[in-house]
Image 1: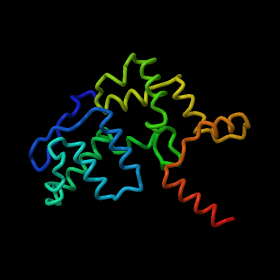
Image 2: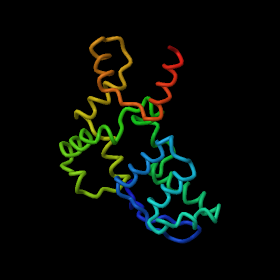
Image 3: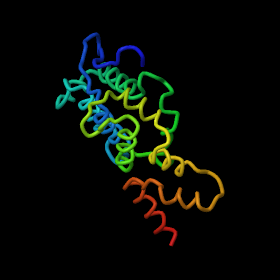
Image 4: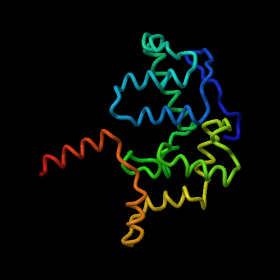
Length: 186
């Protein structure tokens, strides 16, 4: 992190500009987390939005299997901030046990960044790696308080109530699956 942040990625020896702003990467993460979408379409969409050169040209990537794999692997490398174990921390895990969601917690993330760093996430362009470092370093904010409720595993009734209150909603697909299961159990 103390070296220069990447703004380009080499694919098959050629340098390509990448979308490094945290907003682009959050959209890519949301697309990947949407399990209702076709996997290949999702990967193509992500590659097109990560590498501006390929926007609207996913056929170029699909025709070259080596380019496709390399482009995807480097996107994943960038998403993990160049680290293998980057997301085994606070936000890791399955969608059901995540401690935060950018879509549902946006106002708390915004507030925490403004309170602690005076960064306006609606205006400031921030490299994904910087954003993740700052996000992981947040402490003593409402956002952190909510995460602590969601991660609570004890027996205190008030804390259990707070955990339930702050629980993230299920995805539409997961909710449909549970609704069908409940119908069968009636």
